[in-house]
Amino acid sequence: MYYVNDKEFKCSVGVTLDIFNDKWKMSVIWHLLENDKRFKELHEEISEITQKTLTVKLKELESKNIIHREVFPIVPPKVVYSLTPIGKKLRPVLESMFNWGIEYVEEFGTISGDNACEVKLFKK
Amino acid sequence: MYYVNDKEFKCSVGVTLDIFNDKWKMSVIWHLLENDKRFKELHEEISEITQKTLTVKLKELESKNIIHREVFPIVPPKVVYSLTPIGKKLRPVLESMFNWGIEYVEEFGTISGDNACEVKLFKK
DNA sequence: TCTATTACTTACCTAAAGTATCGTAAGGGA
DNA sequence: TCCCTTACGATACTTTAGGTAAGTAATAGA
Image 1 (spheres, chains in turn green, red, cyan, purple):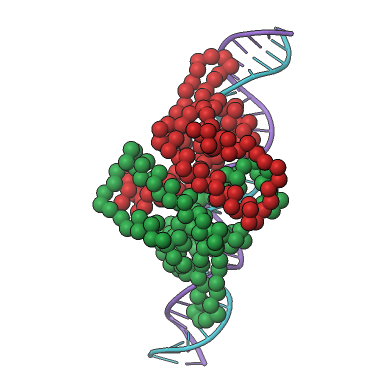
Image 2: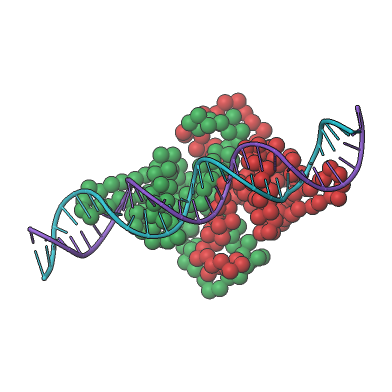
């Protein structure tokens, strides 16, 4: 049995799925894998998310020790988000999702042109 | 650019995240990786999901060609769900989630006793 | 006849996420 | 002085995903 603040899990997969049980957290991790980002940068890159939801998701990830939030006390404000060590260890998860996505599209979708996405993934 | 029925994605990770953007689909895959299952077996194993939601999620996964649904015309009814070839290719995704979950619990949770979960994962 | 079985369906309700707008705080320009 | 700017996020309201609880069909067995 695995226990993470009062919650009980039969399996470690459950721990992971319980954290990433929503629509957005994995996306945030994906974008932070590239490099640290300010709130506005994240919001521009994950353009479909609303400001409020992004705020909530960043707080959730911070409270679970997956991202780190650094505030610069200047005006206009500046806040930079980065992955913690355990957050960085999510890379293999996103990597396998990346690879599966390609296989899925090759079978059931279409690809046009190319994209700079691999760069994001495979740069250290 | 990647296209999967009318939807456009900048990155193949987006394709994967768009499919598994909910609370339950990954869990269903996890349980089907072990072996094919009837509706009732899945419902017992993923006990927190409601019957209605499981029905909906299975239909969604079937429509996306990730699982296969076989109906036996008997009474009481028997319906067996299994992973399609592309569905089986999700194993590395769950595997990395499994591994990350262990690392996360080692750092922020506790483990008591052991579990038979690895068996499920690593049996072919 | 009555109950158990399995895989759903239906109607209703609640909680999570989305939309839109406003607040804060310091500096710059008219 | 007053208003505009930027970056973050708070607030109020609406939409939707998921949860609750009950019902259905068809047959076997008590």
